Picture 1 (cartoon, helix red, strand yellow):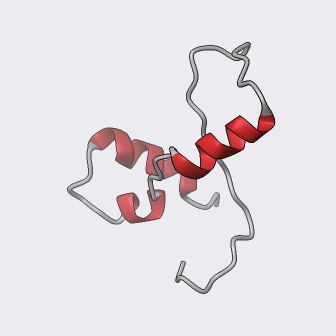
Picture 2 (cartoon, rainbow, N blue to C red):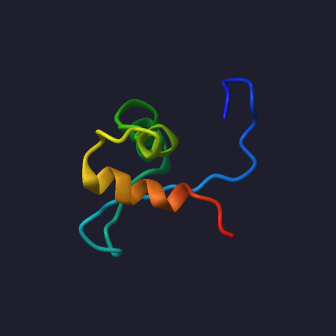
Amino acid sequence: MSTGDQIAHEQSLVHCPNRHLNFGRPAAVAAILRDRVQWIELEAVAADPSAPPLLRALALLGQPEE
């Protein structure tokens, strides 16, 4: 995907201790997502044979279904 392409489908993965965790006020959550999220580009990881095995496994999630 080049820089000018639009995203047609997006998926996100959030790691948290349990599903009952209270994330608090929506504005605070938005600030966390804006300022403190670490992005992992799975497309780039999939193309990098030297990427760590766990990241390469996660990159499989971005592969199109046949």
